[in-house]
Each structure stands twice: as C-alpha cells, then as structure tokens.
Image (cartoon, rainbow, N blue to C red; front, side):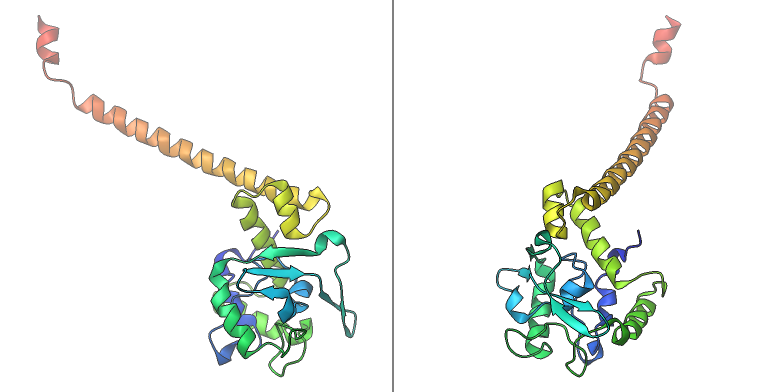
Length: 219
C-alpha cells in the first residue's frame, strides 16, 4: 500500500495555482479524504473555527463532473482537521475558493472544478520537487497516509471507521494490523537496544573488579 509518508506538505505544491503563493496543505492526508470528497467540499462544509469539515457532498468524474452525495450513509460524516493546516486553509478559502457558501473550496487556476486531467501535471511536478517517484505515488495515497497516521496515533477500530467513512471493519482492520506490525518492529528494536546496553554493562563490570578482590583471594 503506497504512502506519501512525511511528504504530505511537500506534495501540496500540486494544487493548481500554488505558485502564486505559499501552497496550502491539502486535506487528503490530515482528514483521510478521497479526491472526490475533497474536490466536492464547499465553503459551507468547512468550520475552520471548529476545525472540522462536513463530508456530505462529492464529485464523480463520469466524463462530465457530476456533483452528488457519498454512496453510503457511513461516508457522510464530520472529520476533525489538525490545527496545523487551519491558518493556510483559511487563507486559501479567502483568496482562491469559489465565492459563496456553495462554492467549491478547491478549484483550478481559472476557477473551474478540478478533474484528474487538469491536475495530473501539477501532481507530477510536485512529486518531482519532493524527490518522490512519479507514477508510483497517487493522490489517493495521501488518504492511505492519513489512515495510517490515525491508526498509529492509537485510534480504536470504531474511531478509525468513522474517520474513514466506512461501515465495514475490513479496511480499518488493515490499518490497525499495520499498526500492530509497527508495534512489533518497535518492540524488537527496543529489545536489541536493551540487550546491547546489558552487554556493555557486563563488560564494564568485568574490567572493573571491586577493591580487595585480589587480597581476599590470597588469604
């Protein structure tokens, strides 16, 4: 499962028009949003004071772009955003988003809706700038990164399902399993470190015999 790792901020340069100002961090990783959910978000769905985004709209690319609702009730949710992206997101909304509460938050340079065809070259440029392989990492991988981070933060199965917008436990279990595997790696590393320190302590103890040992052995 490819991830963008810690490059979520760097690949935000993919936003069309990002060159005009400091790039805004995309919500794909922090909120674990699919591209259609992020592209379908309107200004009314954002509560920047409360640090949340309401997911009840999406955009489907079916030749023409079709605005609709998520396919399942579980996908309709409210996601809390990390405070890190709020100032930049606020500035982005004021400067670049389509006007009005129904206007899309993320639009192209000319104000049109985003679609894969007018976004891919910006994404490739951002990957190259971040030193990441072009063609191997996709926008949707930011969602995987967000889900992985949420799992590693200690989110429960229910919390992870709610954040992902899934009614089935299957996908959430994948991320929790990855977290458990990571826990095993951490425990293994700690075990090696502890053994190394114990070995050093024993060597130091062998080199430094307590005073009186020689005299005691000769009596």
